[in-house]
Image (cartoon, protein in one colour):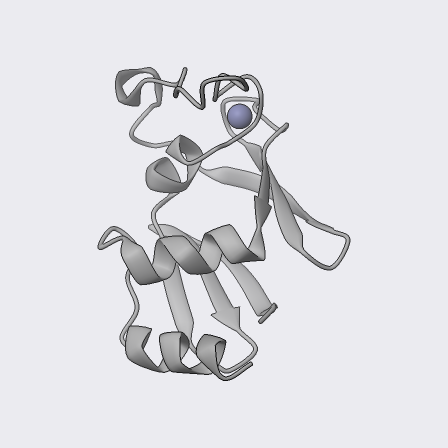
Length: 114
Ligand SMILES: [Zn+2]
């Protein structure tokens, strides 16, 4: 599964996957999932990033497609080292209520059948 389109909306990042299921990721939520070495301690997996350190009105300024497997975001706080693999983005959509989608069941089924 890959994004068919990626849209920076006022209330979050919308990813429309290539099965046409749309998912809305709130910006602050997505920023807090950053798994780069500055945000997560490599050896222990402990999160170094605190919810209170991230501004409520953080947004994504720009994004890049990395290879054929991930998105990289430039955030309004200047952070840009985090890479978000499609697998992780799909997992957040399926497991986290913070990610809004009307078709999570379809998404799950389509991933299983890939
Ligand atoms: Zn990070």
